[in-house]
Every structure is written in C-alpha cells, then in structure tokens.
Image (cartoon, rainbow, N blue to C red):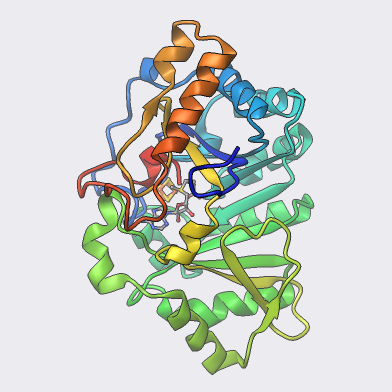
Length: 326
Ligand code: SAM
Ligand code: SF4
C-alpha cells in the first residue's frame, strides 16, 4: 500500500489497551488518564478482523503497544491467533518490561521474536520519579529475562530528557558492550501531556550523540541493521549491541514513515501529530465486509500528511501516547 507521497505503508501499530501500570511523566498526567469504558475498546476478535483487512492491503508487520500491552488479559492467546493469520510477517511488542518476568516465556512460545522495552534511567530513585512509582529492579529483571529467553533483537527505548537522564546517556551506550542490547535514544515529542516538558527537558539526538562521543569516543555507523525504520545506528568498538538515534522531531523521519496506528478504541490514526482519525470500530461492529474495511484504510492513507509540519497538530490536551499507541 502506498500513500499520496509514494511512501510504502506495510506496518501497523496496534494499541491493545489505554491502561498502564506506570504513569511516565511525559506520557500521562499525574492523576492518570481515565481509561475508556471497556465496551469502547476493541475486542481481540475485532482487532483480528481489522488485521485481516490490513493484510489484504500488504500491511504485514504489526507492533502491539498501548498503554501497557502486557496488562491486557488474554494477550498471549491473542498473539497466537495473530501469528496464525496467513501473511503475517512480523509481530513485535513495545512494553515497559514490568510484566516480562511473568509473561516472557509465553510470549516467546506464542511467536514473538522482537521486543522494544522502555527504560529512561538506571537509577532506581529516578525511575520511580519518571514513572511515578515504578520499580527499576522489576523493569531490569524483565530486560534480563528477555535476553535469557533469546528474544532478538531486544531494543531499549530511552527518551532523551535534558536535566533528567542526561548524566546517563553514556552509561546507556556502555551497556551495549556487555549485552546484545540495542539502545535507542528517542527525542521527546510534544504529544498530549508532554508539551509542558519540551522547553526544559527536550534534547536532540545530535546532542545525545556528541555527549556520548565526548565520553566514549567516535561512534561507528552500522549500515546493515534489520528493521531499522527511522533510526540511525552506530556501535562502539567491540560492542555486542548498537546505539540508535530516532530523530522523532525531524522531517527526515517523516519521509520514511511506513506506518498507520490503530488506537485501542478502534480509530485508524494516520499520523501521531495529526488529530484526524478514521473510525473502524463502528464499521467492524456493524458487520462491514473486508472490502469496506479496506476502504477505511485507504481513507486513512489519504489523510496521512507529508510530514508533521503539515499535520493538523495534536491538541495540547489531546490524547497522550498511551491513548494513541506509541
Ligand atoms: N507502555 C509501553 C512502553 O512504555 O514501552 C508501550 C506504550 S508507550 C506509549 C510506547 C513508547 O512511547 C515508549 O517507548 C515511550 O517512552 C514512548 N513515548 C511516550 N510518550 C512519548 C513522548 N511524548 N515522546 C516520545 N516518546 C514517547
Ligand atoms: Fe505507560 Fe508506556 Fe506511557 Fe510509561 S510510556 S505511562 S509505561 S504507556
């Protein structure tokens, strides 16, 4: 499937829940977000019907996210059903890792290979502050478990936060020496609840890279990184893992955008920074045919802007990443 700008769209990020067991300060308001009533959230069978339509359009890679996807009851059997759909090429998960020690093995058996785990600090006290109550040790145990179980690649998403985790950027990079971890620094995006942080806490990937190079020496580019999407990858001499930079706030990122998002309440969202969405939930609930659902995908594609400068903008009080599906 191609959009108006010739970008090949073959990737769908599916938010399976808007609930979360953490309250990261850039993602959720302090008081948390009132979760949508259960009847507004897509049932797993409904997601499978939507995925079926997506597959017919050549969308064959899927990432499960949220909220915290591992919190959703029935996630493992759902993934098993997803892997059985003919044409599914890849299923990955983005998680905060808190439930990985409990569910890692079952996820592996269900057919998940690749995991992205979010971790913004290795300091337990700071972790508690950033996530508003989470346990670093539990998240770290989840990462260790993922490596033990042989998930590959295991990517660690680190939001670059000036004045919060800037003292640890080089420490994260060092982790790639002893572990086959792919550390990815992500620029803070002004979405939903993070607007107030951007002025004080935004750091660009080039700032992160120069800080790392100042401490650890020049990074060598990696060119053959699989499924690299919009990230640029580097490595330290002799390291097992890599260091990636996701310039989330550059148009270069938009030019290679290959995705659509499906929100937990059943809206196709063409762009993170654009408030326009296409409702598929009502269609699927009223028994739309495969062709009718495919039509809605085409409609969403038509709305996909060239880049975030052309997007209608996510309103300041709009859905945060946990609602949209980061
Ligand atoms: N709960 C899971 C997790 O934290 O990995 C999955 C959902 S979370 C919304 C997905 C990713 O979005 C995480 O890596 C998180 O750090 C990132 N994220 C959330 N808000 C963000 C923001 N304002 N800018 C950039 N990334 C953000
Ligand atoms: Fe939850 Fe992930 Fe958002 Fe943190 S980033 S509050 S873990 S959804």
